[in-house]
Image (cartoon, rainbow, N blue to C red; front, side, top):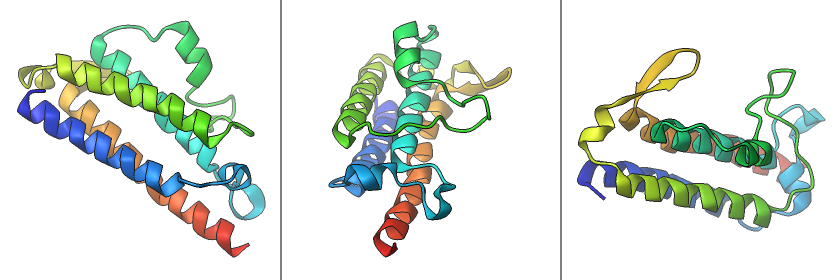
Length: 160
């Protein structure tokens, strides 16, 4: 990888590895736990959400539409109530294996990118544009952001 692309990818990979260490050993009950009064997103929902957002960035950066089979497997982004879709009973192993595949896609995409390409813009949310550099940074930052939610869920789960 080129130097700056490699640095950005290392942020993605490092934050993903940290997330995997946070969720390691979770039982199905904890994975599906939605916090006090069941009013938050579960860790399972957050893992699938992160995978789906990252997958969107892969295809956005490639300038391609996401294949329908991947959309069906990981999506949608939000349900009819504008919330992260409900999922229950999907094992941690399956969620992590699926997410591993997307992290591999990001890695192979980064091998193809040059540092100069990082300044190219791609369409992003409702007609906005973002640079590829920002997109890869966002993948890493979004993962780190939801780690705080997973840590809070783990705390609540252990206290119930």
